[in-house]
Length: 157
Image 1 (spheres, rainbow, N blue to C red):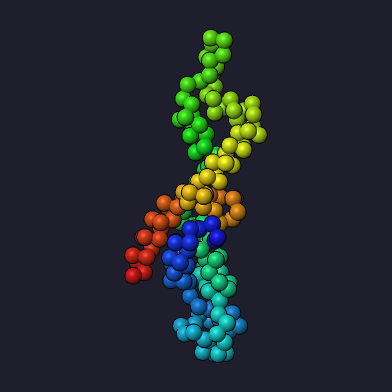
Image 2 (cartoon, rainbow, N blue to C red):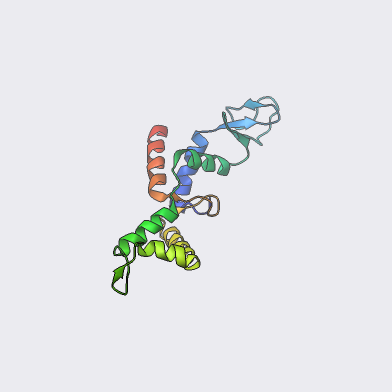
């Protein structure tokens, strides 16, 4: 969750609390107070019905993002960016090569292509355009997150 912009972390946390319920694991009951009326503990988990229960809300935030936002296909976006930057196929000895420059780079120098892709991902993360919640397994658009927050905070308030 450290990759989610700090500005939005508070709002997505509020949504996670609203979409879950306090739950006493010891008594297996949903609690409507700050403590369990049966055993008087204040050590309550959060419950998302149909998903599970656990302490904290980080897992709820991950669940909300994974189920409501579409991951960004960074490799496809990067490849399209290269094709946009270099639209003409290369000309070797007066003959046009049948592949785009992006395809040639990917096929003939995959290490350089991969390094350029990783640099693009790092730049977008630093600029706050994308974020990850699983250390680079999937990337999500910050714009999509903002839209999700706006839609859900309107419902809550």
